[in-house]
Image (tube, rainbow, N blue to C red):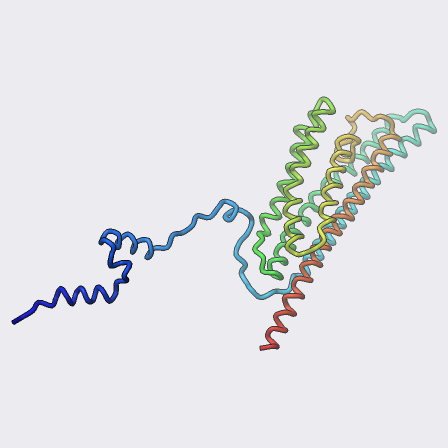
Length: 303
């Protein structure tokens, strides 16, 4: 007698590959389970993960930071010092005009023309030095962030950090020209200065992030931000090389010269704070590299 064992063999083979949980499922349930387990579910990335200024590090071993970053810092610190000296020159011009007016009682038209020609020359040089300093400062931000990624394996975007500096500075420039410069009362001018302070928050956050990642002292970064706000307030209220010209109503040559002296003091403190902030980030990055490098060497030696 022949017995058809095809069904039983099929059942046996199915039982061999089927778990007890699958055995009690209907064919439709088994298909849905197979579909969900065979295809992984990809979680959508948030906007912060995609555009938050981070990327995957390209290396796991620490790489020595480039020494070019110190040269860039020295150049932009020199540029800030030159800006201070130019403001000092403007203050001297105003004080000399005040002294001449005191001694002779009046300034001749030829003397005024020479005075304003010299002041305009200082202002033109200041604009050139300011743009050059901004370029080197941007280059320093790129190099400092890149060195941090090399030394620590972090994933900070150098371009995002540099772009925040440029956006903040040009935002301050546009707001000063469109809002503060056109303000007809002190309240509107104060509101424009507040908007300028908001623009400066962008580079502050970027540099603060780099400083925290390098485990550097970041008080100088915050102090630079405070001094930048103070400089903007003095720039719009008292005046400076970039805001005073021959069409400006001068409230006394001596008073204008004294105001420029106050401005240059804030400029000097800001230059020192910016240089200290850069140096702290560079030293923090170097320390992080030294620690990781020595730890890697000791780990290899122990194997």
